Image 1 (cartoon, one colour):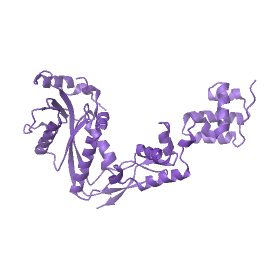
Image 2 (cartoon, helix red, strand yellow):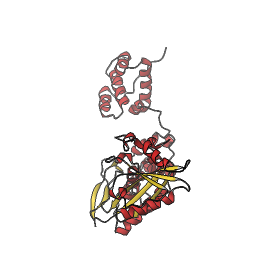
Image 3 (cartoon, one colour):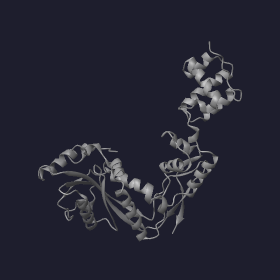
Image 4 (spheres, helix red, strand yellow):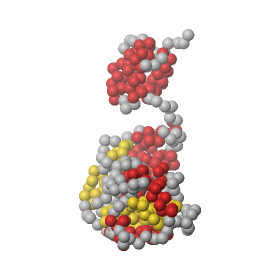
Length: 354
């Protein structure tokens, strides 16, 4: 017969119920009232009914609670002590978060969780399990918050709605005009305006505080003409001052250079006037398919813009038009060097196997 296990005496029923109301873990909040019932003189059978479990599980809860307190009632295996930052390491992490990254050195305009985790792993301590990573950072009292500004000088309509016969039908029309066995590359194209009024994105900060970020009120801007071929991880971009037929012709020529020798590119783009005009000069190795009107979710380049703004082009002040162009070119070159990122952002099931 098993020995009786007595609950630790530094808690009581009222304290556990209060902690249960504050807990962000549903399972921990369910287990605490069961043990509180034992503190209040109830039997373990009553605690088992309260928790909806067996007597053996209640016994396990008691053992874990006695060993680790309320944390013992959380799900998951207790982390290895070597993976938990100590006080000095936590202070160091908070310090680098509050200082923020230096774009020229760190390559980003805001810390991402992966950056902080890498810092913990390489410079401070090892984090063995992937699921522990965010928790270890958040245990330091950090969170992601939308900064306060300071002034300074999925496919809603579905692929079948692509034109009248769907994407496969439009692609078949293009293939019918080409020699047999011509390789086809599927490209997506779009433009993004990048100006001195930059986007403000969430940043890591000490819990309870709100970080600050520069917000320019000037209006100089440039346009990134971008195109990606998700299946091959390729991209072609230009930074230009305007969106018109002439600049679009330049971008099509840039895409044409990026297409593999002997292949033909099918470029999907929205129905902007400079995309559909008969004055547009289209290279011989490119065919254009128009996306349905008012369906930006069908174009993965929109997600590429979001990635570039969040990581390279937001939370900063551009000093001049040339400075905007320089940063946009740098962001485009970074993207070209990340073919795996182009693939993960840009692949769409409805374009594959066509």
